[in-house]
Image 1 (cartoon, rainbow, N blue to C red):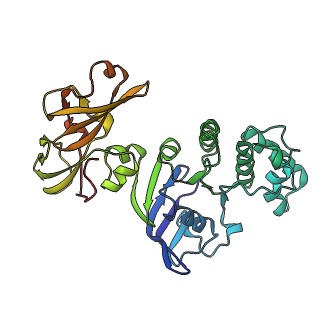
Image 2 (cartoon, one colour):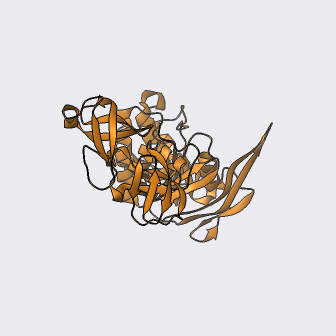
Image 3 (cartoon, rainbow, N blue to C red):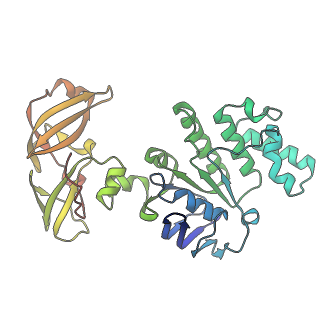
Length: 354
């Protein structure tokens, strides 16, 4: 198991325009855990992964494995193996030859290669596929071969670039389970890149959210939902309810009324208030209850999504499926903001309800 530390890592690309792909990235990746680099396309995720792998060299900062810098170590000797988004299997080689390629390059004897290849194919649930060619495999099977080829050399760090993006929904679920199973079995430090927040939440134990080459928040998955650091972070994780307010002690004055809030580490003054749709309580009175009008609703089987209006703001509420029988469009109903579910952030000009 290997602890990875990125120290103030920076990378700039020069072309028609100067692009700061990664800016002063400081990140500690826990030994033997799965960490996600999450963010929109072009935010610097894959650039960071390639720097860890040794395929790109940072112009500033350092990368250490267990406290030792690896910047002077070439990619082939660094111990970080990268599985690319498009697999990069050798089309003229069999599955077995693809998987065993790394060991062959190391001069490993044929008997050991055959044994290790069989072990790896069993691990990725492809026993019996040794003699097939990549073109005879599905996308999910090719991804498994690429994963086996990376694991057979027993890397210190496994790097996955958008590992599920080329798969359909069913295969994505299957590959998620396989990756989690293998990682738990081998306890290998794993870093993967994704633009899909659901994928990051399902697979990763910690998530590094990156925008425009800069780390925005590094936390446990649930923290991004319950305690985002900014409106932009909250929006990326599906936040839709934002209300401007002014905090004074344990209360926030907003266009919808005065809300009582739990103690939070944010100064008095202008704030952005957010509550996730599933945490608002439609039809409940009491503390922090306001009057709202149901604008529209969508019944989706397992739950009902309501759009409600209050004080010229439109908010979204997710309620149980049966609520579609209790509330009708146009109804005036109480709407409760549970004190423990209200989260305050620095104000944002784009933070109005939509």
